[in-house]
Amino acid sequence: MLRNLHVKNLALIEEAEVDFTEGLNVLTGETGAGKSIIIGSINLALGEKVPREMLRDNEDTSLVELIFEIPNEEIAERLRALDVFLEDSQVILSRRISGGRSVAKINGESVPVSKVREVAALLIDMHGQHEHESLLKKQKHMEILDEYAREELASRKEELRKLYKEYRAVCSSLEETGADEESRQRELSLLEYEIHEIEAAHLMEGEDEELELRYRKLSNSRKIIESLQNAHQLLAEQNDSASELTGRALRELSSVENCDEEIQGMSEQLLNIDNLLNDLNRELAAYLQDGGFDEENFRQTEARLDELNHLKAKYGRTLGDVMAALEERRERGEQLLHYDAYRQELLEKKAKLMEHLREVSSQVSDIRKSYGSSLAEQVRAQLADLNFLDVQFEAVFTSLDHFTEQGTDDVEFQISTNPGESLKPLHKVASGGELSRIMLALKTVLARQDDIGSLIFDEIDAGISGRTAQMVSEKMHVIASTHQVICISHLPQIAAMADTHFLIEKSVENDTTISTIRSLTEEERVEELARMLGGVKITDTVLESAREMRQLAEKSLK
Image (cartoon, rainbow, N blue to C red):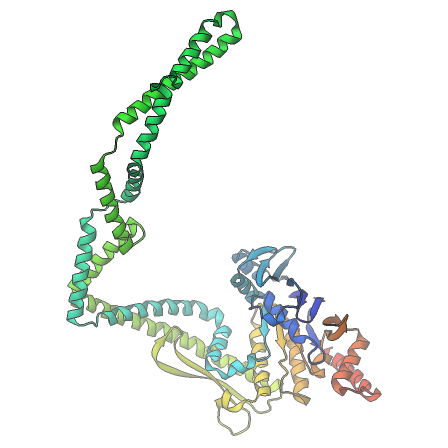
């Protein structure tokens, strides 16, 4: 359940904090007061894109924070599977926008926006102003049905997806085998050349790294020898070299070391230095004797490195990649040499996959049809509650003549709203208000089996009024008995049924327009209902009607 919303510096909102409650939360206000900003800010925290127009002028940083309470252990377990752990039974989602960049966090830890969306999908279901229009698209119907049948369908759909991916790969390989004989011979000739080129190099794993070290040493050998010779001369060969000066100093200290114990210690230290210096001089002399520049060795090393680097540039970044490329070419060459057998193998594999696809697609279709009947029956019942007096609603199935990742089903919701009329696709029958009610009916059915704790409806009441509006309000309250519902509405019938009623207002302070949101007292609720009923002028009669509407709503809720 969404417990708290905190918004700072977004559009008309300077700073706002809302504590939502259980049941039905209704947000109302004048057109343009900022109701859409509230929904937009929630969407931002849930990982949606940041519209530039939502950022408040002259502010460096914007923030949206949502606090969810998770009483459901199953949801908590699914969150843990996403490495999200509850803190005091809560999850905090936040989004900070600063300098054109946004940072998303879950429980204070920065995460990718994609992870926020994953987590949000477990916590809240958003129904935007125009989502009901998606019912005009057939692909949405399959999505809704599969969501309804998710528990039984999920594993079969995953199996179907993997099979279809493998099937498409085999079909692609078969298409490649359709090349003419001349093309196959050209490819085979190229493969033979590349195989020979790699095999002739007699590659050994790690050889290039060893050669790089040797090449670096050889290419700098002249500089190395010159530097070592200079060092050796300074240490041992010149007059007043380090070795000669150290020896003379040692003889001086040795001549008086018996006179003072402290001098004896200095003499011993100098003796160690002299011995170390002599050892170093011997090592330098040995290196200079053996480490001269070998032109032939350098040339061979350079040539071999060039050969290996050419192969890596052509076949892969490492020698391991080059050797893997060799195996791929050998395998492809074998396929081309035994072309007929290879093609026959692919055809047999395709036939087996098609048989398996047909079997799994049939299983998926049977599940869909079973759940489609159940869904249609429940939706019809819900539509009757929403003032569709004589309605028929069905999920109509047709079979495709080809496989897809979804199987071979083509699903379309069809409806008849008048007695004697045949079923027709939604886009040919339903008006905007009817689509809103059909979507609400579907949401009601899906909510019954959904673990998601919070549902948000942004003006689902579009295009309805009168008795239909009253029935929609009652339906909203039914949903709110098992789920938290947050609803933006223009209808007094829905506002009257609210467990908690919030008012969004716009005002001007210090020449700046700002929006605020607050929870209404009982008397304030009556006044807001009167505004929604009466418009500009609120008379005593309108106020009395609003109070009566509120009282009737209270009675119907008991």
